[in-house]
Length: 409
Image (cartoon, rainbow, N blue to C red; front, top):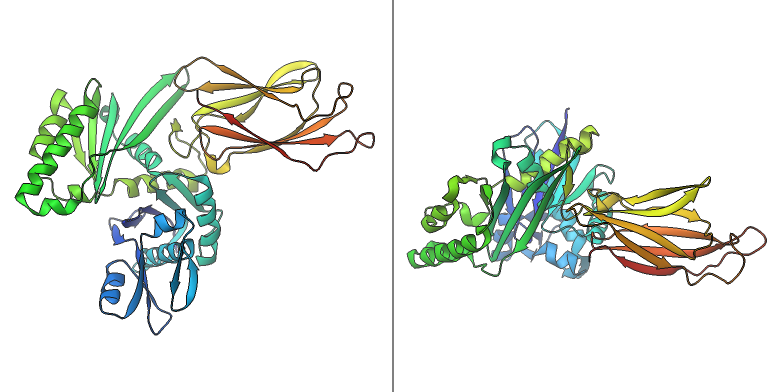
């Protein structure tokens, strides 16, 4: 049985999934239903059918409910929302593997926006449903889009690349650019949720189609104005048919821009990321900068064996899922941590000083400090500091001092 990669694109409305080396893509609504009489669970359209027939109890909007830490009571049993979501994902996985002779060695789950705490909670819960904690990874849609574009022919990304994602009551625009600096190539991707979102049900009427085209055309003119885009991609349920979008298409093809449609774009990006993860090759020739990755490099000025050096705490492009470092320091004359923050966008290096004002007042080099640096997102660093004492001469303290350091100006 060959090992394979499973990519899952998860949103509140729908989950799309596929195995590597497969042309079959599964799309199911993010809903789960338990049979009223038996311990049998259904997902997607079947879940809605069972609930409508009065044969099951439905729970949908599973992702939003999980992010909020919500619960659902089914037949007198109280379930954490993340338990239901993880059960749903296990059934999606089962459906993908049902007609295959492969097994999913690596699983990459794409979230609309990466949140480290949410990913860690889902990862720990998924372990109870047959997902390996070491081989299950979470990435943002920005990262999935980034890997997808970087797998395309080079002429597609000679300038910036855009993406419109039109789903029911959700409209987002993604922007990607590549920046070469000496021997390093940075690839930046960012998502903007647009206020112009509308329900895709309006596309069922001629008047609704005209309104949708006006909305999308206006948004495209605003977002593309004054920038050089070599290509624009379209994805999402709203673009299953695009014969309603004449005005939008005329705007997109201006300046010889290339326009592409791929409804499975985020699933393919997950599979591409999975290839680098399963092969242990790391990032293939570029440094990703997006949600779920650090956008800055942070280092601490230290002295070792009489020589000054910089101790890296995080590098630009490092996954936040594995970010974090612990060490012990012996402060000298300065009772402060001197940090350097470097942004990939070429802004000047920024110096940040964190005072160690909790240390006792005594002679130099007689108080170790335990430092733990954590990164929940790319905007701030959380420091946990502790007076570690000095051998038998001065006892350590149990008190943990927490400080938050902004990484963006």
